[in-house]
Length: 99
Image (cartoon, rainbow, N blue to C red):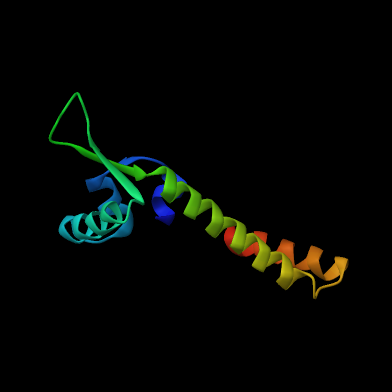
């Protein structure tokens, strides 16, 4: 769901590649998410063999809620730091994630 939330609707084979799992595993997982009403599955008009999946409205709400919760956790963790320490922390995180 995180990948679909970030990428938006995508075809099944691409999703399997991003997750680095077999297509059969991706299909099984998506089947469960469709049954829960969190993901919608559609076939492309130009090639009916290609299946595209994306978050349903309910799935998008859950994804937004997840992102909000992550943001709140991050903010609460940073509250323990002084403004100067936050600056150093952010500089270090930028350095770590730039590679």
